[in-house]
Image 1 (cartoon, rainbow, N blue to C red):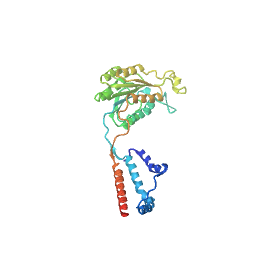
Image 2 (cartoon, rainbow, N blue to C red; image 1 turned 180 degrees about the horizontal axis):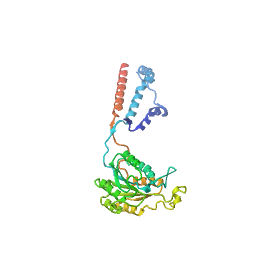
Image 3 (cartoon, rainbow, N blue to C red; image 1 turned 180 degrees about the vertical axis):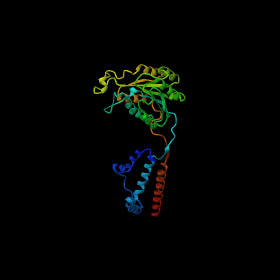
Image 4 (cartoon, rainbow, N blue to C red; image 1 turned 60 degrees about the horizontal axis):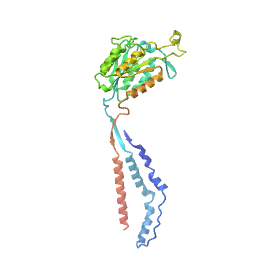
Length: 331
């Protein structure tokens, strides 16, 4: 792919015209001289209309255009270079228990389930983790690795979108989810190990307690960021409000345990009561654990500026030789 690295250099194109247009004509106040070669000067004066004609100006215009083009640094970009594996290794653990289908969230003016909100907003977070390796753990009554660590963010987003309530059972095995993430992260560089755990309840299943798993994660230098999902109150028009759930739809959320898990591992606990909270949390995570290689993939760039620069030099040399040849013809 061809491009100019410094395209703003083309703003210099009208500079010679502006120079000629705006600067005043030079005024000569020296005394007139009597010379013996007046006839020769008159001959040169008669040649000036020919030299200054439009047909004589175009080579100079081409030279200037070539110089500006060289200054704009033309280059040819090759295929993207292979992505180095020096980014963060981040596992995402998402709760698929029965309570995640509770519709106490508002997204774009519509009432949605907790899982629907998590899916839509987590997809944007995944897309922004350029350069990192991401993995996906889904948990309910059991926990399993849906996707190992990979640079393929599109695949992670697709597997998350295809998940559904009850896929792993309808209970909540937070400790097992953390244990699986530890197995996937413990072999990676210590500085890059991160787990983001999203849940709306308390640990009700599994063989490992969440706090024991958190201590094990701390031993392996894995930072865990926990997100508790659930509204403080349901909308008045919600059907669930008739069943006495209006006061606290997040009564099952174990914030104390999620906070302790984050504290033990050097992470942080966040509460997502609505879509706005969730977006702010993802922005905060980007600040705490920034993607190490944000930006476009690197490409092999081949510089081409020497071609217009060399053409300008050759054309200038040709004009100079032509001027010398004309002057000798009139000697």
